[in-house]
Image 1 (tube, rainbow, N blue to C red):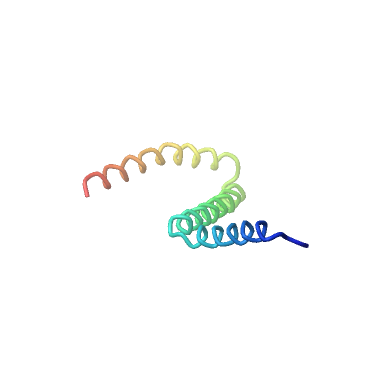
Image 2: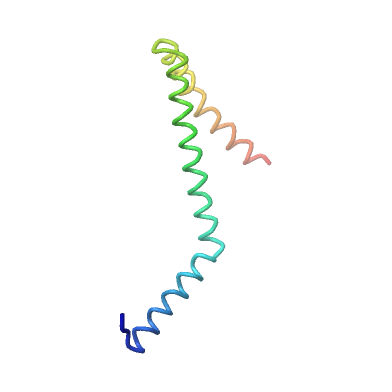
Length: 85
């Protein structure tokens, strides 16, 4: 490909901007958070499949009701813990 001098400077400027953006701390942290979110969701998915297989339909319904009741309580306890400490 043949680039003019103006196109080369824009191209190199974009490459430098991309390199600086990737090396920025906030971008690295956001990328790390996204990776860990994906890992936890994949583990949750595999765990729920395992639970469905082991518990069966009736016991899975009971455990789902308990989980639905405990989750908001754990979030409330975590927010109170964070607020008090």
